[in-house]
Image (cartoon, rainbow, N blue to C red; front, side, top):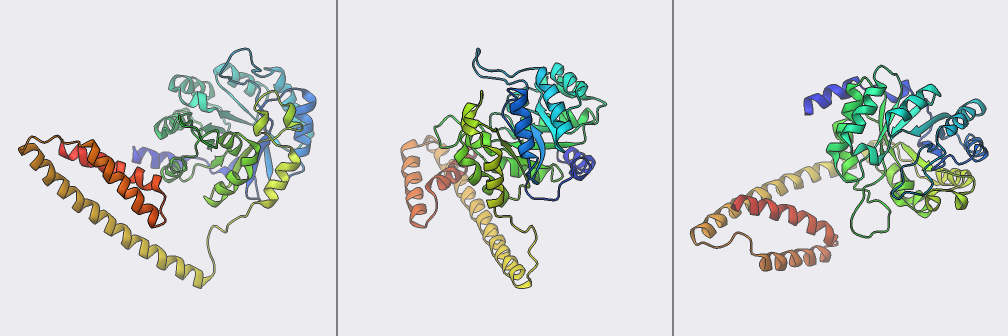
Length: 362
């Protein structure tokens, strides 16, 4: 798989070939849904005043969880996107969820398409969309699947690539989680970071609107994305968010968007100061040495685990002793907190180690 991804990464078209931007972050902005012609064009005109905004987004067809709720204006909204192109310098973008959507968008000269989280989870639909786009030169953005599954995300990207789409980018909008939390969707930053490692040429866009689910989270999530080195944002923007027909809670006004962008702290990608570079190199070398010790310690631990497994087998002792494991885990978490480490981080780490230890004893 790695070789295939390397080959794919080699042939992806650089974003500079299909989108011109000279600011960081560059932004895709617009309402969750195109509701009326006036609302769509008025929002776009205000966004055109922001130099960071390069693409106008608006949902034409809205997949809703429950029936009898607003599911988008449909085909008529594509005419409004045409008007946006005529009256502003912005490119246009909308979500497609089936082949009919693709055909209508191509017919109406929409500039960029995106595949939503609910669609990414279904390889059959993604393949149908890919087939409908075969031979078409258009950028396609792929949102992460609803659940934290990098395989599904990669699979959707590969299907589009194999259909001849080379202008690709991905949108990180967070993942559903069973437990209650502050954000609407859990970031699981490690997943888009791993995707970027596998396909470094693939542009990564963060969607703080869907990740947070509340307008008050847009600024901190955007800053977090910038701190991770993400250069692009997709932010839902509406001239009257409180009156929006869908996801009103997570939308902001164009004025607020401009305010947020101006307040973001942009980091230099490469340090130029010689003393700073030396300090960073020293710390990285120290981290590498510690990592090597950690690997050796884990290897030593697993040797002990194997010997313990043999003893348990010889003496007919069960591999898993839950009471003891729970006591050990609590002790590790308490010690971690004393050292200033997050208990949940240590819990997740030792659960992985314990799972491997149990596997070795079976």
